[in-house]
Length: 67
Image 1 (tube, one colour):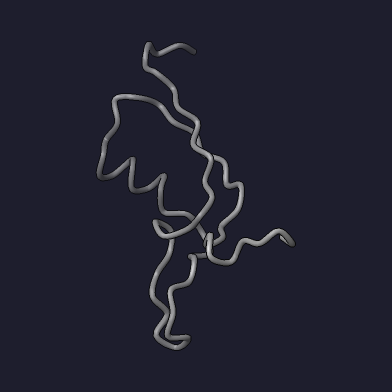
Image 2: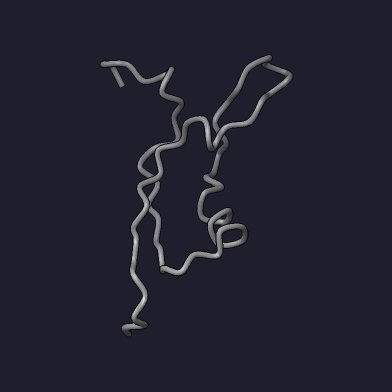
């Protein structure tokens, strides 16, 4: 069903925006789930429809050629 709104598909990759400080490990760690979709829905209240797909939830500092 067409609503006339633009549609955006988000590719979620984790990183800083989906991370939290873990005092037990004394470091920043990526959450188990992305918070992007909920943030957009509740805070941005977009004038577009969106969908999201989690590609990975990794911190770029942990990505190497040997993924």
